[in-house]
Structure formats: structure tokens, C-alpha cells
Image 1: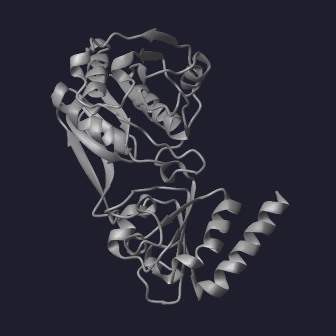
Image 2: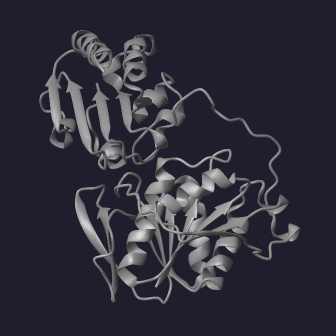
Length: 324
């Protein structure tokens, strides 16, 4: 049972999440005795592609050309479906990013495949094919059986350990039969954030809620994030008030994240917010209310006023950084 894995690139570079996906796909292929076939779409250097073999990709397929220069979910899905069929792959793995969420259902429709989104563990069994995922906003674990011949999975971020599995590999250009007529989307302009760590890539996230009181009080939180090399985030009421940009809103109606360390500063912990951060490895909460729901989800909790606690946290973070 060979496994196809789609590897996104960012301006021709792969990130930690890319290698997590290859590691996961390689582990499934090892369970079934198949190959790991990675697909990269767009311009990527050979030195960058070699990194995929380091994590277990037996074959790397390159899909290039004007048709794929702009992200079009339908075009990408057609290319990946063709690659899966050409290589007899019974499992297709993608990340659980916004991009992949638009592509995965299209692949499933093309291949008449069952789809399991947000899986966070290797299959419990391959015959029958059963995968595990969080359900009920992370409050329970669910098991999903896929009975179709082809299975499409999206892997929850930061849910599988990145493992080096160096293998001999080949790189091939793949003709997916794409045509200009396949393009349904035209990009007029694109604006990219280049000077800020993105939420989806961050291993540490420092997030603030209404307990920050006002937008003017955000400087210490931003400084703490800078010291820790973290991304900044916020709860929905904060973005609704206009204190922070909506791109920073995490929760059920915002971004779903799974960092190694999540700081919830002045966030009460409504179920909608916890739905977006419950997969974090460690949660540290600071709140004045000892009954705040966030403390039920937190691994470490501090009951106190942020005006007093945040400066002390910042001081300790600076000491720790200086000791490294």
C-alpha cells in the first residue's frame, strides 16, 4: 500500500510541518510495505528536495508550469489525483492547513475516496483502515473507519514526531495533464507577510484576551513573544473589539493551532476558544478568576493580575534567554 504525500512549499522552501508529513507518510508506508511518494508543486531547488529523502520519501514528483503558479484548489487536486493513480497509491496524505482543506475534498471526490480530516495518530489498523482523531472540540477521541479502496487523510499539525529516515530516492518530473482551461482562479495581486512568524508555523504562541483590558496594553505581551521567539494571537472578543488583527484570532471560528507551548493571558477559556488550542502540547494560563474554564485545560495556571504577572514573566524569560 503506497502512500502519496503532498508537500507544500513556501517560496521554494519546506518547513518543519513538511517533514512531519513525510515522516507520517513514511510510517504508514512502513506499516503496509509500500513506497512513500512525495509531490511538490512549483519551483523548488534540488537541494531542498533532497531534504524530503532524509525523512523517508522514496520518490519525489515535481509538478511545474504556468498552470500551477497560482494556487487553484481544483488544479492542484487534479495533479495530485493523477499522481496517486499513476503510482498506485492507496493512501493520500496532506496537512490540515487551509490550503490542504480546500484540496483534500476535491481529491476524495476524484478518487472516490473516503476522507478523514485532522487525524493525529498512525492508523490503528490498515485492514480495516481505522484512524484516530480528536472530536467534540478536543474533549474526546474518535475512531473513523474508511472502507473505500483509496483513503485521503489530513494530518493535524504538530501531532506526529518528525523522524529522520534517510532513504535512496529519485526525483522525477510529473506530467499531470494540466491545461490552461483547468485554471478557474486568476490572482490579481498578492500581499505577503515576511517579517512576522506565522501562527501555523509557531512552536510557541503568546495569546491575549479581554484581560489585557485595552489595545494599548499589548506591548509587554509582544515583547514576551519576541524574547521567546513566539507568534502572537488573541481571542475572538479581542479581534472583534479591534485591539488586534483578525488574522491573530484563534478558536473555533478562527485559526486552529497546535503549538508546543501556548500562553493564554487574560483569556477565560470559552469552549469556542479551547476548540482552537486544545491540541497544544502545554498550556500556561494567567487569569484573575480562579474559576475560569481555561484552568481546566491548562497544564500550568497562575491566578493573578496581568499587570503584575506579565512583567515578571517577561523578566524571567529574559533571564532564561540570557542563560542559553
